[in-house]
Image (cartoon, rainbow, N blue to C red; front, side, top):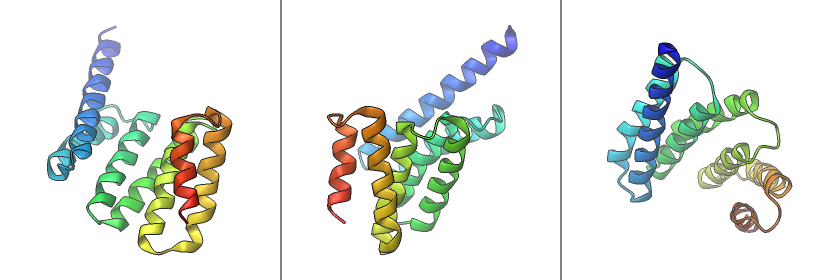
Length: 149
């Protein structure tokens, strides 16, 4: 009982840190966002020791932060690690996987690695259309990104 309660507390703390990081990132306060993401990452990896969808989400968000700061290699590493975890944690057609695939495609576009962009964005779009339906806002985001290549 105590372990379950303690685990849930750690999960809530990690989720809160991740959300605070996202809040700061949305406000373009990148230096303020980073420690929150890192604290969430530390809890998921070292305290809970689980490779879950929550860890993948934090890695995806941290990848977005590094990408926004122009640290493309670190962003790529975060996105790729998130994808490996997503592959094990959720179904192949899960929309959360598509977010990371979409982000990785956008990153390759920013890096000028055009050969990798189209297949990734097409994959993200297909997953979102199948999982969410054509009218979902996330499908519009993927479609917009895909049309710009």
